[in-house]
Image (cartoon, rainbow, N blue to C red; front, side, top):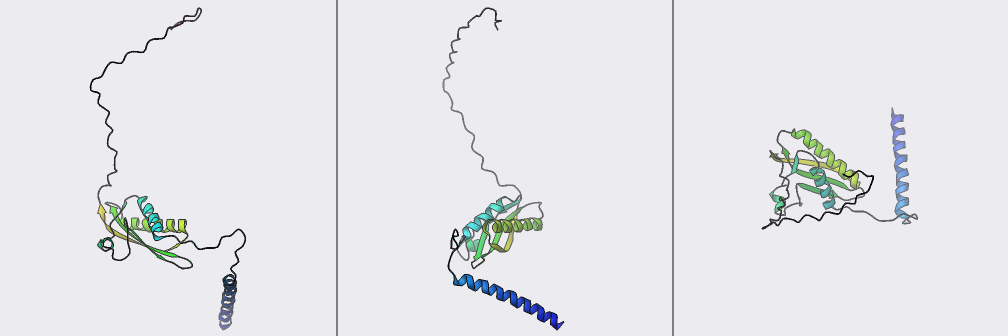
Length: 183
């Protein structure tokens, strides 16, 4: 048993030392291969927040809710339209998302919250490449009717005060051709 543990420890040590060699080589050389661009890409918390809001709006039976008075007063992190994102920068950035929602009456809240978590996590990881550490769903209440869709006001036709009868267009002369039946 001791031999097996020693063998496993030596294999792990060999793997770690192999990675250290790769990391030290890349850290020492600042040479960028031809055709490659050096640099770091940072994606703003606002971008992640917009992705989460778009995802939230695509889920049936969910509406964004107010995150609370603390956010309105500027205490703590800002949240807009029911979504707050905290980004931990590093070699591999990690995001935590807080979502404040209202659920339509009659829907099963735990199932809907699970869908919200999964869809937001999937979209942020897919579109940004950032890992999502947590999606915290805060159900603030329920609603009974859908938000009314802003309908366009009906277009009124201009009222004609005095309609004049339109003159019929003059009829074109008909040509009569022999041997052709006339209608």
